[in-house]
Figure (cartoon, rainbow, N blue to C red):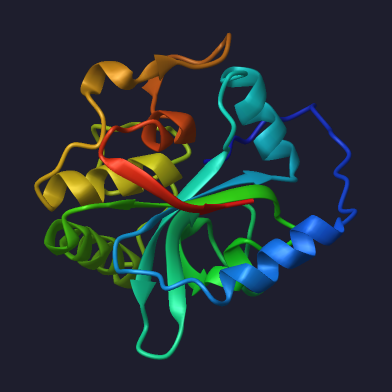
Length: 200
């Protein structure tokens, strides 16, 4: 989840602690499953904005795990992380290690639902959105499934798979000057359907 604010600037600290290094090494040994949900607290200014909008939430971004056949990948909708010059904000897929790279993540967590069939279906839905080059939803409009922001993507994929991780009333008003209700990463993270399997 990311927001585009003009006229606001934040500095980003990228100092890496030994515990973060150890967490990165552990991530490479986790036995992921299709449909695991990943969360991170980012280092960028977008993450600072999310924390201002949702001060009690720990995480600022979320994605869904899928198996590419040789590497566990994360499908997520993200702004301002182009893969190449001219790349647009969109649903993208990248290795777990890139999603949790120390330059992007301060903290992170991996959560899982018990129903592996529905988790796999959710991962398939997310993969389809990736293959369709679904653009990032800068309007944060849950009623428009042609564009996605991070938590909208996760919530949408699991609803299509037959499980509602959150209720519609979990959407909260955002920041002064913005209209509508938003689903924050913490709203997903607190879902009773999820069990934590790793965090750092």
